[in-house]
Image (tube, rainbow, N blue to C red):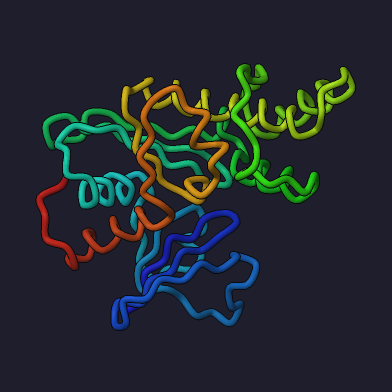
Length: 220
């Protein structure tokens, strides 16, 4: 059986027979009509036989991976951001934002390639850029560069602004569990004003496993 979390830019795939995980660019997915057995994500309905809502998959995946009964989990994708908050083992709140989080992950990846930046070698800046979303934040970067800041400093301030937006959207918790490919970006994870625990790219796939009964746990 093939499980898939198919976002805007990347597809996360799991073969339940072999237990293997794969990361594939959405543009490289086969166009011959082959579909995952179960799918979630922005493009999940397009490529999946059966679909599970992204927030449901995120909540179930978080509860399966996190031992604490109370936690806040933020998922940062290419296109949007989502969060779920548990209290005493039950979902207390959740939210989805494709405006303040618009094209966040995609924009960060685009800037990294365009300016040829190594986020692992960059320091978290003391101040952030006042931005509202990934797309609109690009103009703030250009303005900062025109006013004398280096490209790397302007992008670092942009990333910190994006992180602060996500932190506030999730309710400003003391500890934040983070899901998504941006877990691999140390500049991004270091820009949050709280303790960050990175869970990686596969959280929604874990939620799919719960949804189809591969993991037995009373979650929702």
